[in-house]
Image (cartoon, rainbow, N blue to C red; front, top):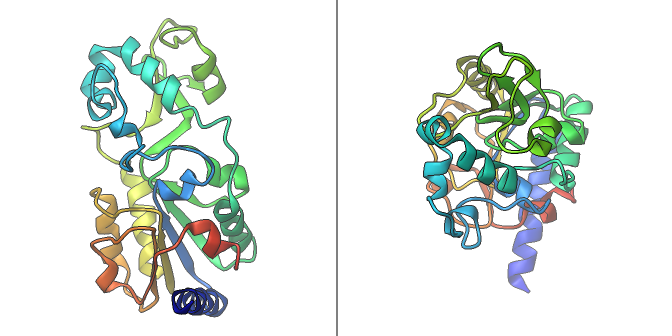
Length: 244
């Protein structure tokens, strides 16, 4: 019982922080989308623990995409299609906070586009998005529907191979997206970090740009940054955000 009271106190404290803040930045990882049914990578039933001919880290690399495009797309279409998923309470509440003018930016490591589906406008996607796809030859744009329903390797009308606008292993992050995310974090009065193990660089180092004294970490498991946070809530995101 004591545990429950403590959790309620923490959620109450979090609510108060949100109410008192007008420049909130939300930084999220895979855990934000798992409650929509999208599998994460590193949990025990995540993608890294499933059996494929190659490990997912290898499949989702630039080299593999170039050298084994067909095998890449087989995995990608099977595992990365987020079109069939809907935003959950966390996505929805964040979009509401942005509408009220309190939340200034969502910085996400996810590529599923669920923040935009929920209505968020200012979203910095560090690892790109499955919703954007381009021909490698003529740079013509293609939507996710086209890619996921194509047979074999998706091709452009010009004959070029289409590549998802997703940051693969060995590829650098988009500089402009990174700069915008850093700027948002520098200006934040409240920073909420949620659903991420904070073990992936350079994304996790972005926390170092936060200069305020309202850093909230919401994650089921312990992270390397817990001791630096002003408030740590080990709870499912949905349980926390439904109270906002």
